[in-house]
Length: 149
Length: 149
DNA sequence: TCAACACCCTGTAGCCGCTACAGGGTCAAG
DNA sequence: CTTGACCCTGTAGCGGCTACAGGGTGTTGA
Image (cartoon, rainbow over all chains, first blue to last red; front, top):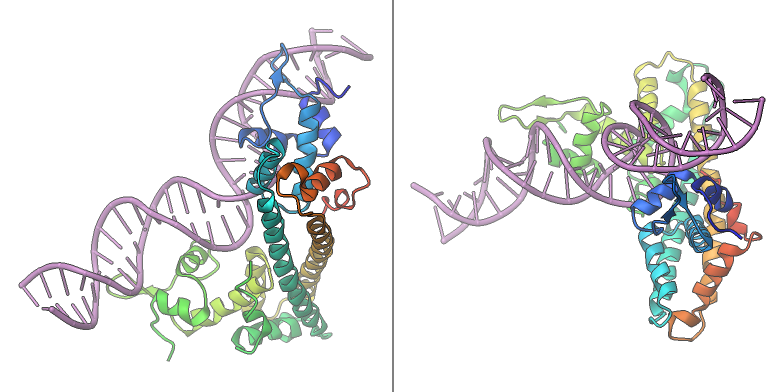
């Protein structure tokens, strides 16, 4: 049913941009499909499935290399699955760390926005003053924030 | 006092990598310093200040272009400060949007991790099964999550 | 005296995950 | 027979660094 799709149709079916699909092919993430007589790519159901999987993982912010690893696991179900746990764990740790630093960031920024007075020129701007001052202050919370990621 | 610093010293003083400092110079964010007789860059107090400001803004995840704009405001205090408000506002909106999608992400991932059973091969892995299934499911929350940023 | 070492220089290429062209071909409808 | 939507390849660019290669400088200690 979902056979012999052209790239645009595959894109619509999975919600992935055409250029991105070609990029995935180039990097080996999505196998090169057959070609129809005119040279157009002709995708089958397996491609739809695989691309949907990729997109789902990307939505989970999993890197392309890790997605490749996961796809290898799918292809070789006899492998030890502990690696999958670890992959997801690592991902979770990464995400939580970023989450924490984003929260700190949000605090800083909304505090900053609160500094804006009613003056109309940059010289009197509370935000700017705060930014300049904070760049000096060693006690600023965001200085411990930089060694994230 | 903090005059005639070499690039390594400036780096230490501000916590910015040497290569990054040179990159900032190349992109015009940090003005090119004088050179000492041997051709080494010789930084002054103004550079320390400016670089600290840049670093602080980067910690707030403000883009280099916007930092340039802020520095222009600092240099021209007579400008209308409404633009600064708007810049910070935009930044805050960006950060909050990302924060929300990161939170959704964290939920997804920790749910995923919970799916891991005690099986030892990838074929039985609950995480992998969930990922494959979720890629199909249109009802999956993370599909609405992709149009973030 | 001279070798080891830390530091500096320029320039270029690579990272990730796309995105945006340029410059062409294919094909169905009006 | 022309318009327009779609497809092709290939390359370059984005942001914000990071990592070389291939060289020079300057201090320290054997």
